[in-house]
Image 1 (cartoon, helix red, strand yellow):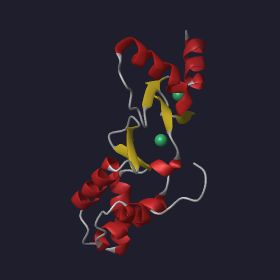
Image 2 (spheres, protein in one colour; image 1 turned 45 degrees about the vertical axis):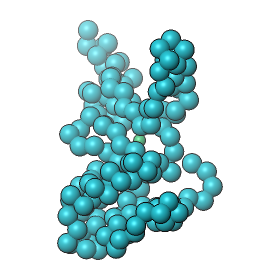
Image 3 (cartoon, protein in one colour; image 1 turned 90 degrees about the horizontal axis):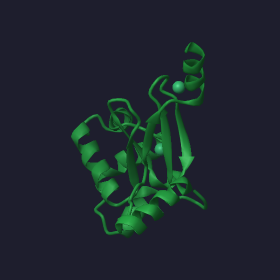
Image 4 (spheres, rainbow, N blue to C red; image 1 turned 120 degrees about the vertical axis):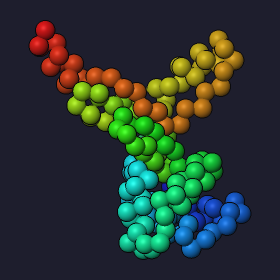
Length: 147
Ligand SMILES: [Zn+2]
Ligand SMILES: [Zn+2]
């Protein structure tokens, strides 16, 4: 978002989380890859440093980072879950089910929904990284032209 981003290791140390050598390698891989990655992408990257780290360890570490709110996950419509560092900024996605196009929209767009849910149902919304599925502008035009 803004300012200098601290490394995951600094963040975890500050919270008193044990930093194992395996975790250091996994955190490095996540930070190197940036953007949206799958557990498998992280696993491939980690293998370059240490081929003995298992995919299960990668998943466990991702769970830990999610619990600490340092990583968020979303479903971008493919069979795998995508992870992003929270420092990437709070945002959400539109995913076109026709062409697969993925775009980002800012969190503020959800504010009216948050307000309504709170006022009408007393419900507090914790949406961190959402994907909305539908048709992109291009595909809508194409469909309209066909009919
Ligand atoms: Zn995202
Ligand atoms: Zn499309």
